[in-house]
Image 1 (cartoon, rainbow, N blue to C red):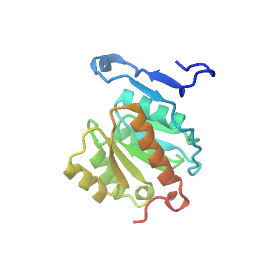
Image 2: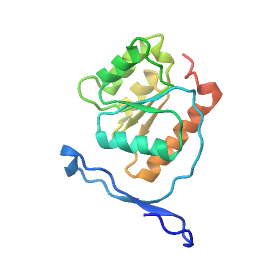
Image 3: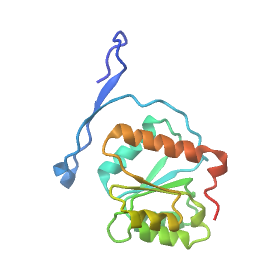
Image 4: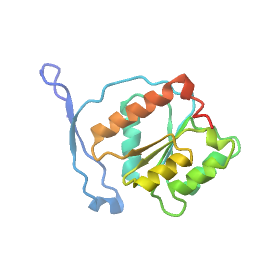
Length: 182
């Protein structure tokens, strides 16, 4: 809840994460945080593709992007197969950035990276891997397969916003807008 304008303390609010279906049993602490610093980030006028199978993580990333006032729409693919179909669809707008979870059922993040890396058109799209558990071999494999960065998902919302701010500032620079060079 936001405090009144007359309060001397910075505005604060409690962020409650949704409990959806079988995710209700997952315990994640509620975070008391200050309002994220508002920034305006200009990425190429294309969507960001979030490839994430966890509904709560989808909502958190989308909220962090919204709180940062990033103008690019966030499109979500809940599976690696869905992301690949979206990327290969005729007439589909190419995303300016892919945020990719490594651990997904069926077609996982590393397998999707292999496919993207082997496709001359798709390998130009910068990919940032966001994962809960990234062991060193997975980090190395992700980078070898063309990921621009591998970040461990933070357990609190404030750190997620900070991580997303860093990602968007990095990719908003004109020399990265077209993706890393091969």
